[in-house]
Amino acid sequence: GDSVTQMEGPVTLSEEAFLTINCTYTATGYPSLFWYVQYPGEGLQLLLKATKADDKGSNKGFEATYRKETTSFHLEKGSVQVSDSAVYFCALSENSGYSTLTFGKGTMLLVSP
Amino acid sequence: GAGVSQSPRYKVAKRGQDVALRCDPISGHVSLFWYQQALGQGPEFLTYFQNEAQLDKSGLPSDRFFAERPEGSVSTLKIQRTQQEDSAVYLCASSPEGGRGYTFGSGTRLTVV
Image 1 (cartoon, chains in turn purple, green):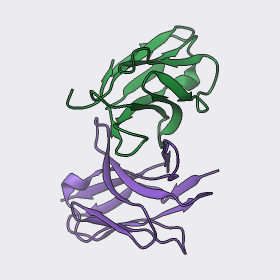
Image 2 (tube, rainbow over the protein chains, first blue to last red):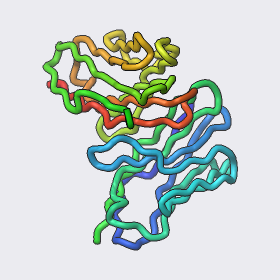
Image 3 (cartoon, rainbow over the protein chains, first blue to last red):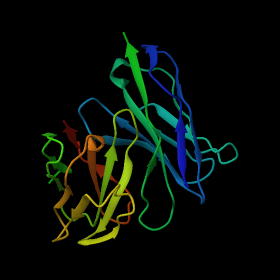
Image 4 (tube, rainbow over the protein chains, first blue to last red):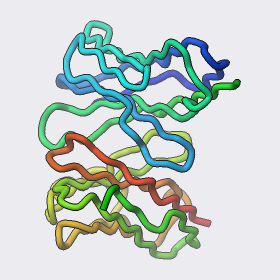
């Protein structure tokens, strides 16, 4: 079955540091890939997505590139802010039917001033 | 409404008690999903509705879990004879079509004591 593996946290960074959160996946088909963010006390919010190989999703300074050859979708940001502190989830959905999401376990990011 | 609304936000149940969790999706959204998020884990799919039809309930962990959406809008997830392992955040999401463009609610945190 489908699965998503992402690096364990917490990831602790100082403000303006470079961020990478690794994500790799296993899928039977050709999935779409997503990063969701969950701020404390809030629901999951879509951060960015990519639907085919070599696509780059980007939003709010975050980027991730769909790498089919390495089955990866690593999240990056050049300069993190305290307000980026949250839990980040990598997810995939098969591009057929009603597309349920398969999530990784999540990575907590803590950014200090 | 403007977003997906879930109630209650928090629920404490004694072991063996029945609980009902409510989800109000975005008006007009055809698709509705329930996910279960255990502490420190990513969300896991429970069930999917298209309008009032429950098309997939493969993720429901046992026959104590039951979901309905009788008029194709509000949905209720019911858990009978709750057990400690049912403690989790239950997330609802809706989408205007086939799973594309999910909007998640803030979830109901269920604690079984």
